[in-house]
Amino acid sequence: MIVLKFHVLLAERRLKVVDVARITKMSKTTLHKLYNEQSTRIDFETIDKLCELLNVEVGDLLKYVPDPKNDKNTNPELVSKSD
Image 1: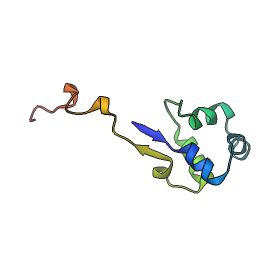
Image 2: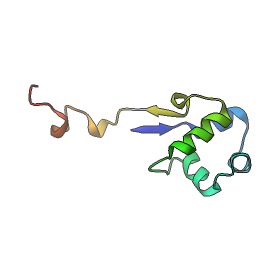
Image 3: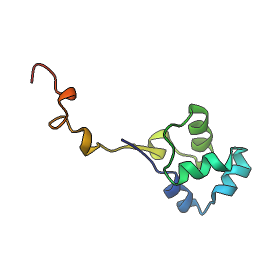
Image 4: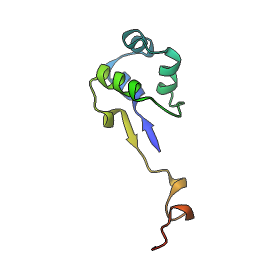
């Protein structure tokens, strides 16, 4: 699963969602969803604006964490036929 570290980056910079909305002209609703990790998708344009504003790379904003529910050993759809 992908984890968004937006809230951590804002805290480190002592920024609020409203500050980001004002600077980037992005919707406060969108930013609040990202901050609270309630988004199910994110546009490249949004990632670009956040990376530029926060002066970070994409990998600083997003992190991949394996989901234990999708473990290859427990999900037969992910097991290859050669296993």
